[in-house]
Length: 284
Length: 271
Image (cartoon, rainbow over all chains, first blue to last red; front, side, top):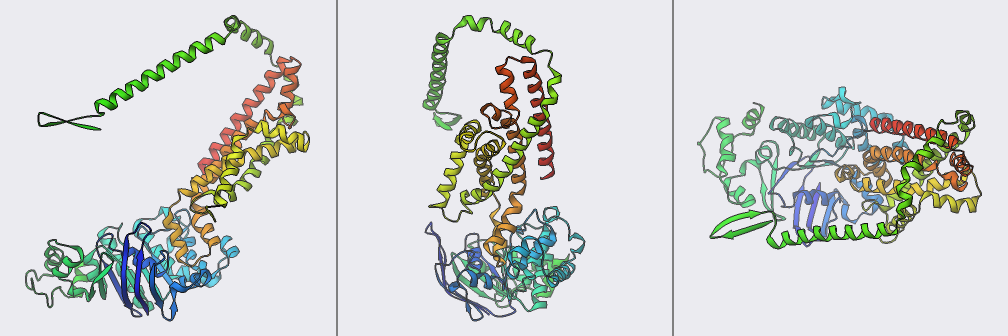
C-alpha cells in the first residue's frame, strides 16, 4: 500500500505545487489523477519516487519510508516503482531490447550493464513482455524508428520488467491519437490486473479516466478536491476541479454513444453510464 | 516594434522614430570608423612594394614550377609522421576531453562551485594557446621530435573537443535521463544508458572534425622542430628550393582533401 501524508512541495521559485496531500492507494488499485495543467499532478507522482524532492511530509510504500532514504536505499526502492512517461522518454538511440532491459539497471552491476551482459532470465522476461504487448518483431529496431503507440508499449515493458509493486504513469496518452490512447490505457489496466499492481495514472482526458480507472482523484491548485468513484464525476465535480465550463458535453457526449442520451441528465446520484457500455463505445 | 496612434487610428512600424535614428547613427559611425582605419593602414603601407606584387608573385610561381617530383620519395616518411601526430594527438585529446566535458556541463558536473570552474579554465587555457606555441614550449621540455608534436596537438585539441562536447551534454533530452533514473539505476549507469547514447553522434562528429583540423595543424609543427612534414617545408624554404616547396604544398593539399573526405563519411555514418 502507498500512503502519503502531509506531502508538500514548494519549488524554489516559491510556487506551492502540493499542499499537505494525504492519500492512500491500496494494493491492486488503479487510480486516475485528474486536474488542470499546473495542478501538481506530475509533481505528486514525482515526489513518490523522488525525481522531485518533496519539501515536507512522508511517503510510505508498504513499510518503507521513501523520503527518509539515502542514495543506495532510494535506488533500491525505485526498483519497486515502475514509471511510464508522457512522450515515452525512451532512450531514442538505443534498441527496443536495450530500452526494455534498462528497466533492470537497478539489479545489474555497472560493468555488466555497460557491456549489455544482462542475466538470461532478464532477457527471457523481456522477450515475454514484448510478446505480451505484440512488439516481438521490433526487438532489434531502434526506439526512434517506432510509432507513438509502439514506443509507449516499450515504455510499459521497461516499467514492468522492474517487477514493481507500484506503477506511476504520467500522461501516458498525451501524445497519442484517440484510438491508440484507449488501447494503451486498456493495456496498462489489464497488466495491472494481471500482476495485482497498484497504479497512479495522471491523465488529462476525463473520459479515459472514467472508462478505465477504479477510482478518480481530482487535484486543483495542489489540493485534493475530489476522491471517489469515476461515475460520480458530475458536472458539478468537474467544475470544482477544472473551473466553470459546459461539462454536460463531456459526460453527455458519452451518454449519446451509450444510447441513453438525456435520460439521467442532471441526476447527480447515478450519473454516468455503465462502464461496460463506455468500453464498448471506446471500441468503435 | 512600435505601435503609433494617430487621429485615433493605430498603425505599426518596425521601429519607433528614436530607435530608427539610433540605428542609422550606428551605421554612420561604423562607416566613419572604416574610413579612418583605411587611411591609417594606407599611410603605413609602402605602396611601392605592393604595386609590384603581381610581378613578385609571378616570379615566385615561376621558380616553384615545375615541382621537383624526385623529392617526393623523401617525403613519405615525414608525411606518415604528420598523419600519426594528428591521429594520436586527437586520440589523446578525446580521452582527456570526455571527463572534462562531463565536469564542465551544468547538468552533469559533480560540483558547480569548484569542479566546473576548474574544467572551464582547462578548456579556455587549452583553446587560447595555438598549437605552434604549445609545440614551441614542448620542444624545449621534451626535446624535438614526434612526441612533442603529439602532445602539442593533444593539449591544443582538449579545449575544442571538451567545449563542443559539454555543449552537446547540456542539450540532451532530460526526460530520457529521468526515465533511466526512475528504474533505480546508479549514477554511472544513468550516464551510460541515459546520456552517452544521446551524445554519441556529437562525439563522433567532434572527433573526426578535430582530427581533420589537426592534420592541417600538424603540417606546420615541423617549423619549430616538433616532427612531421613541416621540417622539410622549413628546410626547403630556407634553402630557397622552391620546386621542392611546391611538391610539399601539393602533397599537403591532397592529404587535407583526403582527411575531409574521411571525416564526412564518418559523420554520415553516425547520425
